[in-house]
Image 1 (cartoon, helix red, strand yellow):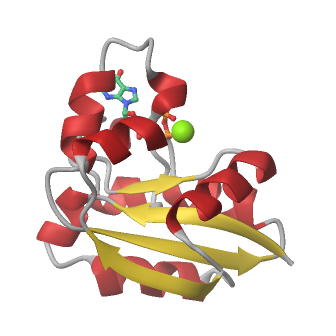
Image 2: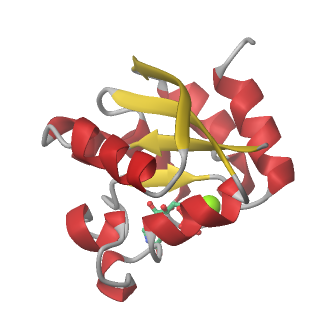
Length: 133
Ligand code: IDP
Ligand code: MG
């Protein structure tokens, strides 16, 4: 069964949306295999997001992900990577489809409530980054 990494970002944790978001995954047949609430350093965020290091928003992105508690989860299900991306919605909440997490809860392109791996390969790397299983 395919697995992917999901992160509930600081803006959603701060607004007490952890359970609402977990319920959306579960309702959409993604099982939450592991879940932990953590806070990461800016250096760890920089390592996690290093694919974006050349982007103009990289520094703000790393500052943001390390600004408060986050919830990191391993989701499991059929086509979990794609399924999660669909449930999350577009990067910019303004462009996200109805009933997606980002449409429901996202505030802006940077405070968009969730992260999800974008490929099976990256899902493996991102799961390894946060979980020592
Ligand atoms: P994704 O989260 O939908 O996979 P990516 O392009 O991988 O989107 O970007 C990673 C994160 O960087 C996004 O979730 C968002 O928080 C932030 N980001 C992406 N593009 C912009 C931008 O143009 N301005 C500010 N932040 C951005
Ligand atoms: Mg991405």
